[in-house]
Amino acid sequence: MDLKKLHLHWGACKRGRKIHKSYSLARAYRQDGKNRRENVLKLGKLTEEEAEQWRRLLQAAKNPGASDTDVAVVDNYAYLDIAVLLETWNFWELSNVFDEGKQKERTIPVSAIAAILAINRCVDPASKSRTTEWFKKTALPFLLNIPSEELNPSRMFRELACIEERKDAIALHLCKKMQEYYPEAMRAFFYDLSSTTFSGSQCLLMSWGHCKEGYENHIVLALIVNTKGFPLYWEVLEGGTADATTISWLLDSLKEKLPISIPTMVFDRGMVSDDNLSLLEESKIKYISAMDKNQIEEITNLDFMQFKNMTEDAALMDQRSDFIKLDRITYCKEVRLLGNRRYILCFNTQLFKDQRKAREEQLVKFESFLEEQNRELLLAQKDRGLDATKDKFNAWLRKANLQGFIQVQLEETYVPKKTKNMLKAIRTYRAKRILDEEKKLTVGKLDGFWLLVTNHTEKDGDRFIQDTKSVVQPYRDKVIIESSFRDIKSFIEIAPVYVWKPEHVRAHYTICVLAHLMDRTLTMRLHQNPGNETSEVISHERLYDELAECKLNRIRTPQRQKIYKLTEPKTKHKELLKRVEMSYLVGDGALASMNLGAKS
Image (cartoon, rainbow, N blue to C red):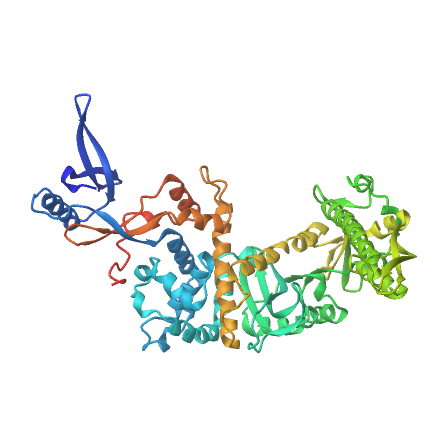
């Protein structure tokens, strides 16, 4: 950019009673006999002092003695995605949770460390030692007024314990804020546990055993979210903690630490036991959950053989007057009221199709396994035992839940093996699959069905106060907490976890939960405020990708002045900011709110 050919141009616009000037560097030229102007670099709003600096700079550039008349962007920092997340942190007033009274000797507040770590989790998960380098490449030093050289890995690790000390205070704060901002979302809580694998051998919370990822070293995260998917309580438990053993602990924790009456608890069938349900009933807490599949027939007293010939379109359900059709794919039937427990039988056509499809896929896999084993049996070098061979096939069938209608018939055969002095016959077997179609239909008679249990048993006359739909819908909505776990695991990058002390591991999870809170807040706003040009942007990941294009740029001038400008936002960036209710982040005052000396 040759400043010799440029001049400072400004235009004015009236907003209300105020007149605003917007400046740009422009180049004048003639075309077709007319004077024309090209705006080369938009500068936006400038103070009179800044405008005068640019005029002197341009004047100096036209002086033949000037040695360097180029303007160049010499550095840029991640800005708009970072600023949106920081504003979301501020929306929840999370910095207020940390006791700043104990931080007089700290140059960087614990709340700032927590914000930095949580924002990093959202956009660029890194180990604590690498977060400081990421921090320097963002606008956070300017936004938080923290010189980048004051943040180092030792300080980050040192403050993890302080962050974890405030975990219960954070949960209490979030609970109060959610009651203030979204009271309707507190009508039900979704509770679940999920395991996360862990590399290394030093963490005391880690345990080797069976988890959702198989047999691994793992830790368990217990999480409660409300109906909007906002996390409001969480706990890190030792690996190997069984789902069903946590209900009693959960009730004690909620009563002690949250200033609310516990609403309806929604949880998965893995936590259902007679003791747990009785405990909730004694505590006067409402619940909605599901029974194990092997309990459906006993509790309902229904003959499910009538459903064994159900076709893929599930047309049979439309013919049954005893089932209520809740929506396009869901049918329900009140089946039993036993004391304080009410049972609702549900059928979902998509679940039916998925379970049938999964069974057929397992059949195809078994055929491949059978062929592979037959090839190995033909190449046997030693005699094969009948029982050991049969056990191998039966183990595969049990794991795939196919043992109810498939048997493997083993036919004894011999294959030759040449030794040094003679030809020897090796006893082996050839396996053949025998499939019983009638038993296959019987095995699939419960496909698509699930049985809800709840203690919402109050009636007004002969009708339940909580009707069938209002009980079924919250359980179907438990996908909210499942998506929460997916999101937390996706940006946690827990395997490997980069910390191992128990308090540091717990703090790591706390940071990840807070990051999920910010993700969820922004995703909800995107769904509530659909766009035009950006209508396809409905996830926080896509939002961050789009906003990352707008950076804070440091511009070099011939006079070695430090001039900072934001990348000119496009229409899509402005629309996205409007959708998440933060249009002001690229407004005239955006730069004025930053301490642009914090990097130096």
